[in-house]
Length: 358
Ligand SMILES: Nc1ncnc2c1ncn2[C@@H]1O[C@H](COP(=O)(O)OP(=O)(O)OP(=O)(O)O)[C@@H](O)[C@H]1O
Image 1 (cartoon, rainbow, N blue to C red):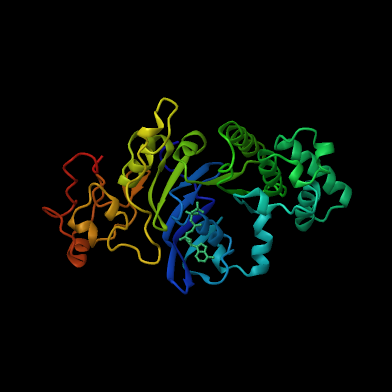
Image 2 (cartoon, rainbow, N blue to C red):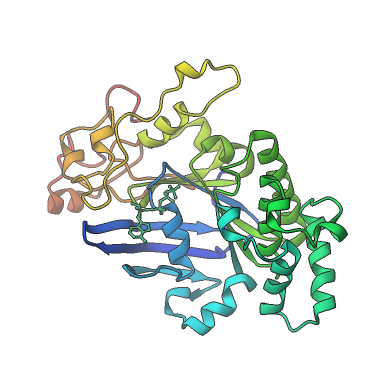
């Protein structure tokens, strides 16, 4: 799907701000992030390492520890703001309604307990069931996520599992209470492409079986292309482009998205020809002025150095935070009060090289 669905989102994140107060300074890890998740869809949050993707997910579940603090924003889940919930309420929401699967199975699984024990424990935390029932459900879940011979593998320890199997075990844990929403943070980063494809295949089947909505966090636009319905592109702690996956790939509006696309490896490519996005990921303790992408942007103009563009609709169902994205209209009053130079007034004149304005 490319346009945003008409129904109310399952999750509605607005202007989320999370900071870490460290000795080196204030890290603006999430700096005004906004996006929606709709029923039954898979939303990809994509961006380079250090763009605030994981901290966004942790903030949504109030899992940010000191020296971090959620400063602002709302995370509406079926209408209720999760940021206003108590820790006791959040404990019940986590796992039951919104489950999160982290990126590193080796640190998420405890080596001294069997995989089956660890999945059963999650089930028993949320449901009042006997040990025997929890074990039965564990075996069923292990089968669901494609772990072969679950009746014997249930008694294996994590080190007896391959990387792919450990990731499946984590997935079994995450879906054990049939959550409404699953947040999967880089679930396949450490795996080879064949295993990666198998995990996404399992996720797809589980989504259908349990009717979950999924947020998939990844640094890899190639993964997004194969698995997501819609995409939020993250840069410098916020979302800079939102679109349906087909629209995004056909016509990326933000120069950063275009840069990411050029860095997707293709089977036909000679790896030497890969072009990573030039320049460095911004230092989140000292974000550049104006548009935080401007130092790396091939289309930046003088106003990009001082004007910080918000995410705005550039066509129905699509938004971008770039002054030079075609359709990015600033009202005359905004231009006057914020001193942006718009050639001839609003809308801001698109860049002339064709690149930034497409
Ligand atoms: N506990 C912490 N204390 C201080 N800074 C932190 C802490 N956790 C995260 N950060 C900082 O927050 C910023 C965003 O990190 P985050 O992990 O969300 O990025 P990411 O886009 O998910 O990247 P990656 O894919 O590498 O995890 C980074 O600059 C990181 O160093």
